[in-house]
Length: 119
Length: 511
Image (tube, rainbow over all chains, first blue to last red; front, side, top):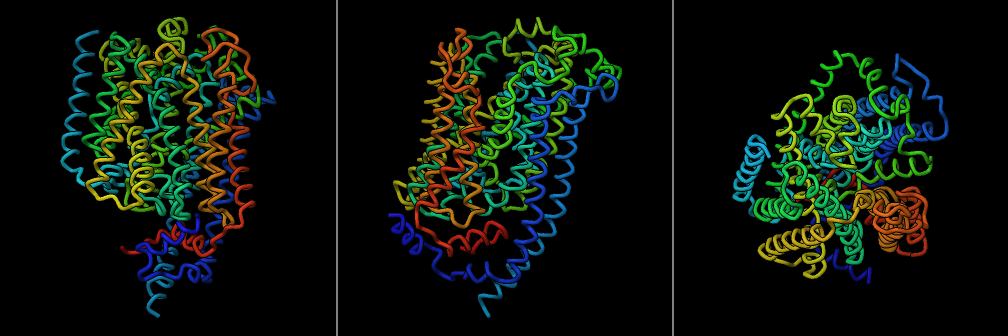
């Protein structure tokens, strides 16, 4: 039944002027793009998740964050504020990197899809 | 109810109706109705996303939680904020590149299977209904307090207003109500925070020293552990907060109201900055309320602490500020429930009626009618449920909605975009295992069963220990999707190549 739906898809509007996505996907250019994207997304995602979960883990299973840092402000608050700083910094980094990747993506559309179809 | 409150309240109602009038004239197609024709700018949409996110629960709820529980209340602010990094890095752009109106559209870009669409619509509708009841019951209780009117009248006012916005103005009205409200809310927050800081001589250190002796908790107020004593429970809550956001239907829908992935990105960026600043300000509101209103008075007004922010406005800014914050709180509730109606209606009218029953062959007129009927039905149904739920403790519904979003929707979104071996069977098992495990675990958890009468929905001992089961249900959602995919031989690498290319470079065939 699932395949029946798959056939419907083929009958759909996609049929005309189909782009060979497998070819695009396997192109050197796209592979390189994906490699760069992954190298950027994956480490940052792991980093912010670890940084985030360290907070409840530390507050639940340790007490060292309760020592004072500045006056009556203890380290747990500094850690909490650091989460905000981290978010803003990652936001800025993301915009920069994504902007650079956009250019590559446009290039792929240009080289692989638009020209690729004609050549 | 003072004259100022009535005037500001009516001003908000009038303003939103004017917006709806203009939006109605611009709402001509189903695309306009569901997604404002994709015509919002990244900045506008970012403000609207912030608006969707800064619901009464976060504005009044977190301020109250910080006022009453100190650091533990601030956990919410952090969880909701970091959630935006998940949206930014993993979800927003692929979602925009693949989807049209709904989550199901996005998953179906890969599978084209009615069962998958049905399952995605089911989880969307479940989340919307639960979240909506929680919002409406909270709204009723709150407006009752703010304006001194009866609960059922309050629910009806909110219900009728949201229905009008959605029915006539669709997503254009909903977005602009959301934008106006977000700006008003931020203005109110900045004014109150400024006044609070002024009272502390603009010295953060003084503020911390003062609140240390302002509450019955003493020095413990500034330490974690007042509310969340159990480690696994805390971590489980934090999982639901950080992963649930990227699965909430009314948030997901917001990424279809812009033209392309670049705009979706700039929306998330705007939203992250706005929400980040907002959540820092919740701290000043919470501490301010603890110091200048006092816990006794906050608890007297409402045991959940929801009145902390309005009472603080009254204490430091007088009657006008109180009236302003009350009116903004009202607008907040209206805008959020309108967004919920719209996302529920899209699942019914677009996914179930348009794509499954009519197989995508419904005429524009039929689709539009279906969208409006579905909006009306979702509204009436939730109003009725909310009217009947006044006496129930429904606070757990919010955590349930987040939990289902994290367990049922997020795994399938991530698998669809990032996992080659994923298939139709996997998509269905991912959604169903996440949905069912969240539902079952919450229904036997301390949120539903408590030995103390009135503390939860039923009296009794909970079978499952965690109030928020995300720690178990999210892995079950991922596991369900994994096992389902592995057990089925079906695989379509050609289709995945297409999805991968489209999701990542944002190419769409000219149609």
